[in-house]
Amino acid sequence: MAIVQAFRVTLFYLLLSASSFFWCLISLVVAPLLPFRWRYRFVVQAWCNCAVWLAKVIVGIRYEVRGLENIPERPCVILANHQSTWETFFLSGFFEPLSQVVKRELLRVPFFGWGMALLKPIAIDRSNPKAALKQLAKQGDERLKQGAWVLVFPEGTRIPPGQIGKFSRGGTALAVNAGLPVLPITHNAGEFWPKAGWGKRPGTIQVIIGQPMYAEGEGPRAIAELNERAFQWVRQQQTELRGEEPQLSRLGETA
Image 1 (cartoon, rainbow, N blue to C red):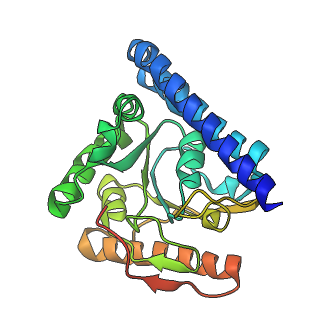
Image 2 (image 1 turned 90 degrees about the vertical axis):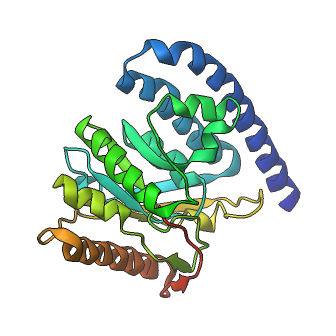
C-alpha cells in the first residue's frame, strides 16, 4: 500500500505541476482582458478547485465543512490556522474574490508568481514587519472596500498539527479599523497534507467555520481582545479535533 500511495502522490504532483504551468500561460493572456471578479474566477478559483479535486480523486484527501451558516453576506477578514498548502487552495477556491497576504518573493516565481500578481494579493516583505503591517492595513482596507475577502494566516507560517502559533494582530487590526468582523476558520489539513515533504495520506479534513467575531469597542485594546478571542476559539476547536490541547509553537512570523 505504501508503494501505491507513493505512486498516487507522484501522479498528483505531476498533474498539479502541469496544470499550473498551462493554466498560468493561458491566464497571462486572458486574465488582463477580464474584470477583477471574473479574472479571479478564471485564474484562481477554477485552478484551486482543480487542485483540491485532484487531491481528493488521486490521493484520497476529502473534506467536510461545518458552519456554512456562519458565513456573512458581506466579505470580511478571514483568520485561519495554517498547517499545509491544502487550506490555501481550498479557501482561495471557496471564497471569491479573495485577496491573500503572501510573501513578496512569491511574485517572482516564473508563471505562478506572474499569474498571482494579476489578482491583487497583499505581497509583503516579511523582513520588515513594521512596513508589512502598514501595507496590510492600507491594501487590506482597499480590498475590503472593493468587495473582496481578505485572508490572513495570523500564525505567519505553517504550524504542525498538535501545535498552534501565536496570532499576530494585523488581521484583527484591519477588521476593527474597517468596522467589520473577523471570520475564524480552523481545520486539520496538516494531518493528511503535512508541512514538510511530499508525503500525503488519505483521509477526511475537517473544516470548521466559526461565527463572525466583532470587536468590543475601538483602538488597540479592542484589537488585542478580539485577536485573543479568535486565538482561543481556534485553540479550542483544535483541542476538540485532536482530543488534546495544542501546544504553543515558537514558529511564526509577522503577517
